[in-house]
Image 1 (cartoon, helix red, strand yellow):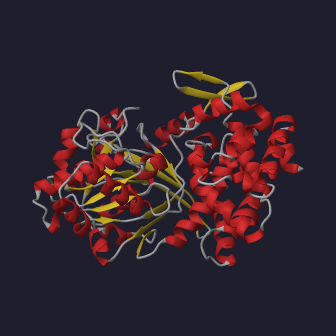
Image 2: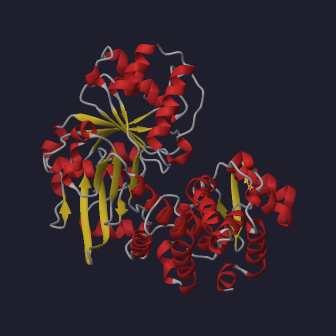
Image 3: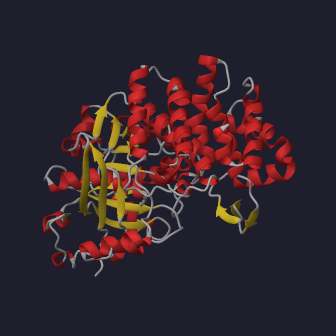
Length: 497
């Protein structure tokens, strides 16, 4: 039996939280760009929780922005999915199984764009949420009247212009727009891109005034480890325990945080914030962003290549290995925590770091290192580069754990096969996919420079870094040294040295 609205009546288990029929009558109040597990496991979780308590009382229209993959599972399951929460909270084990009903439907931007624009005419829809990865928040100068526009910001602008037109620019038709991409000041960046696109498309001043006065672009930070699709064995065990099949089964840790930069007006619209301490709405969320972006995300980014090339598949496996665990711990506490580019006291950073390490060791999560390498290069630039530069300001010396992480990144990005614009590296004779917009760049760099000068060439690329990393005293030499050791002696022996 597959999970669906019709089959809900036949699903019974005392450990399962199911939606009431009244949930399906709630109006659509949110437009969400992205179908990924992070959105399902965090923002959609909060909205679902609020709906079950009679607080927010609104559902989500999801926009599938890309042409890759399929939304058939959402269609087959009436957009229902199970969220299995596993972890430790306040010293106690947490296990929750929730059939989430926050999503009403999924629309494909490539084939149902007109239907998405129709949503702009719905006065109940006041919120836009997005997670299109860091690469998604990029300016592409394009005509927003295409069907559909290519980039996410252009799609958003087209939606907002349609709404402005539908409601004649009324103040009440303004939106609260919350990007969750892991980019500092993501709301401000998205707003700047949207305004530049509006100018490029020569949209009239009345619209841009409405955009300025009546819409709220809120920077936000999401923090919850939500791995990708569970392995087949886990899905089968779940189906046996609960009596149904769920192709959208989502596993998440207990810890959750959604920090949103906003005022009282924003808070009055985001009423789901009332039901969970994990939602924080405040005028300034910088401290939450920096702690999470650096101690959790930067540690993950610098560790993923090291761990994957060492032969570990999951974060849990890596943290069970004494050598890799020491590396990640020392990296986080000795290189990153002391160089967060924001005034945070040492104890706060240290304590947050220790809590993150506990989360890495969560025995219930199968968080793949390979999955963390998605857009590896951009993540390194956004999450790690500011820490590296701050470390040199503070100490004027090489942060060795960061240097080793850079070496592992360059080695991971060594393309050995290119086929139909798909790129592959090699680990122990087995190919692995390199899903990174810089894969072709590295393909050419490795072919041209080889091991001899690849480090200097990559660190010298000011067009990517915005600076020349070879100017950092001893850094290029350290990365080069570690790359040679990784290639000749292996990952774990290099860490032990």
